Length: 386
Image 1: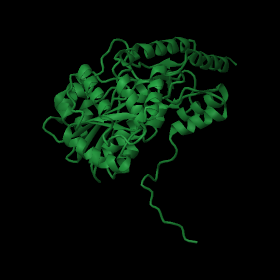
Image 2: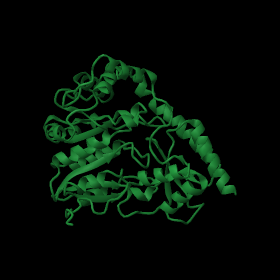
Image 3: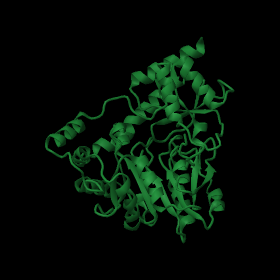
Image 4: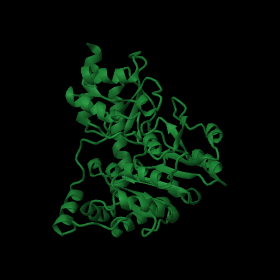
């Protein structure tokens, strides 16, 4: 019997670390602080708005670009937050999640041989998305332990083949955020070039300690060369809804939509109707940073009883911890041991590097109920005292 001869487009890719650790957590009944999804309830009003939309008959295809009322609400939001006038007709597209928006943006502009600058540790979809398009990821490590961008190295890595720079702020997995100096350095580097920016801003509202989110949308010169990806799931505690959006200038969005219309075409209609109404309540997203900062602070207070050393987190769902004073094991082995024996799952940060760089750091998600966080730390304390 002859079987199809398939040449894999991602020959070195297996299961993601999130699948591996979540499966291990389920097997050992561990508390899963690896997966970046809340375990607390979302807003009941938003659920009711979805139900109402379905009862009102809004159950057929929405427009390819997304429900216009929702695009209008997004346009009003980004003008309010960032003074950006994004045209809802031509510069905003609703997508099935932020990760999809990233993939679609890359696919719409990358050609074989193009180079894309990626900062590591990096969200795990970036590199495979680049490679599946025949492009080349140019990897630049963030400077440990502050995880700062070395802009001098960025300048050195720019070549005639550089097509794009990917940014992520607030950053997954580190919690690092871009500041005005980073923006100024970026502007200096791309000025006078044709380099495209892909800015992953799915944690835009989850900013701590009085800091400000430096969205690419705030800078007209940068926006005119950028795709900017967002997530409703991260804002409204409904990651399973898989709904987000992309904002880009018309000439880039035109290419984005060419791919989108044959890949997804249309997103979940009732949820779009609900969000178009719910977005009018600014407080729902404006209070998100303080809500999750309280959880970060609570988790850090609990973890101070352990020998884990926290690294600064200024945004996102995540807190990194250095475990050098606890174990000399490699990160994946230590993470598996904690899952199997302590009953707490975390993610090894080495999994966010293509070459598995080891700094003895784990990523924990604190977007959980206080009781979940307390139970997890109690398990860790019990394990390390036994």
